[in-house]
Length: 235
Image (cartoon, rainbow, N blue to C red; front, side, top):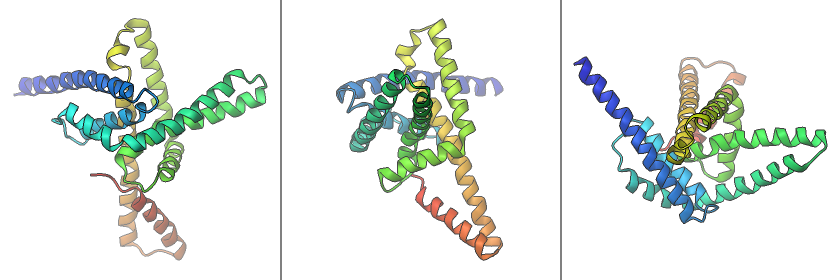
């Protein structure tokens, strides 16, 4: 029985490995269909939405059909996000690269860090939470990135270390997993952070029910509850 369980687990891992290759192909195809600039956002959201379902236990999704469906449903939002972050990213990188004053170097270095901090979370937030508008999504990407900075820094280091190792040992893997594996890590990190956030909301709600507390405490919990209502998880 133990041997059978091990075989099943190994089979599940191998299926994930193959499915990540398929997701990488679909991401590249969707990006090219949108002429890169208009396609990278919808492709990224479509891939992340599938990975999110994997983490929720839905392993038997028809990948191609689900990708096409989500690509279409996220097309408008994906284009807007990719244009905003694309333009801002180019401006910051160019300024950081060509400005010689160290004061401005530091300034644009900090701005680049904030940019990547938001970029890491804004796409997972888009597919996980049912927020009203783009402004809210960008706002929460900064809030979550700062509030759980240790998770974000570990993610940055992990992606950088893995990319460096692959480049040194087997660069061909980039053609198979160059987009899908980093997106898998990003969504894995985001899901873990979202679980921590949602657990803290649940604990505060339980505490609110059991203790009336002072007016100040009630106000703070009320604000927290509003945050919870804003961060309503998609089904």
